[in-house]
Amino acid sequence: MNISNLTKGLAMGAVLACMAPMTASADESAELVIDGVTLVTRTAAPDHMNIDEIISGWVFRSDETQAMQMDDFDNPGMLQVDAAAADWATVEGEAGESCQSCHGDPSSMAGVRTVMPRYNEAAGDLWSLEEYINNCRTERMQAEAWGWNSEDMISMTGLISLQSRGMVVNVAIDGPATPYWEQGREMYYTRYGQLELACANCHEDNYGNLIRADHLSQGQTNGFPAYRLKTTGLNSIHNRFRGCIRDTRAETFAIGSPELKALELYVASRGNGLSVEGPSVRN
Amino acid sequence: MADNVTPRVRVPRSAAAGEVITIKTLISHIMESGQRKDGDGNVIPRSIINTFSCDFNGQNVILVNLDAAISANPYFEFDAVVPEAGEFTFTWNDDDGSVYTDTKAIEIA
Picture 1: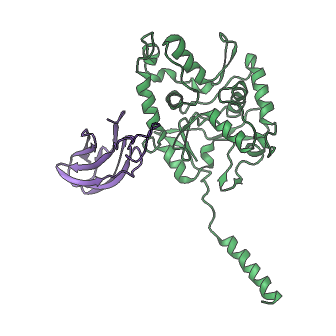
Picture 2: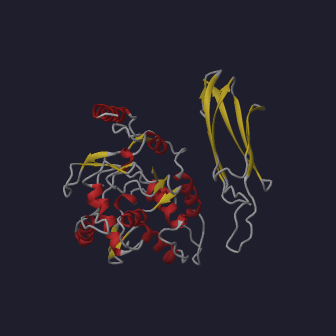
Picture 3: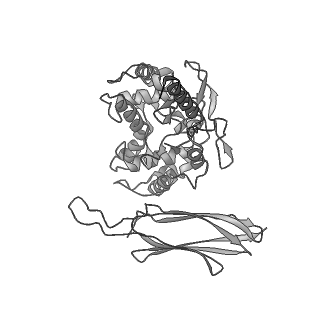
């Protein structure tokens, strides 16, 4: 092959590469409607952020994954929600109480997920939803606490999140929550691990771009607990954080640690204005 | 005996005579294959849904034989012609002899 043929061959290769089918990408103009309720998947960012628009992770997913979440029958996370609904009514512990005996129907939890994590005055600390659940279990029911990342716990957060579906995330970042929020923001912009990646490097600077074969989202937590096709189960926020930090080849913070709770508050505040989607469907 | 077995079915409430409708079914079930061992090395006995059927006014619409390689929570989606108003009956047979059923009535619009 002489030089001119070689050049031609390379040029042909370039043309073919351009003609290759695009990788499956999401329809970014799609609207998320579940049971006739339209959820907010794009809105103006809160004032404290460096970007103008916040976008739910749902927007970044493929058409098929988006469709799974739009129909509760097709959303596999709903199986765990049903299991949690059974737990809700089950009497456990010495006190002879169930969730239901104090709280009534799960719908009484409407709005709870929108403000989590929240500063708990009585405890003098920032509490995640998991801690509120366990506090009920150990104090009021006198039952055993659930593990933060146990299936029972994640399913229950799914049931409680579902009650707030369509309501807008609105975590408090002022008053006593301020120091936690600032700690979380510090972490968000700190580079961790051998790869020296901060949350912001992927989820603020590069959302929408491909990371290997996957579209980076903004890392919003409004859809948690999220059913992941990868793990075929609902996943907690802290589990996702741990996975992300691990992927930077860093030692991760423990699930339920003060660090991850602070990060949870900060990341949640970056989604103030998006609808609660839990249990969502993601990759 | 499998725990927390709940059948779920979605059928439209009404259809035109002769219309083809889509039916979705799902049953939450562990579908233990019988191939696995527990922590002590003992085989966990097989416990699966082995047949699923759907009938319309006594006439069979679909009959499915399931084997041990089927994943947990088997989901079936299929089409059916609705010639007249009537009732769909869904039946799942468990290895342990349990039979789970659900029925859905459909009207002609």
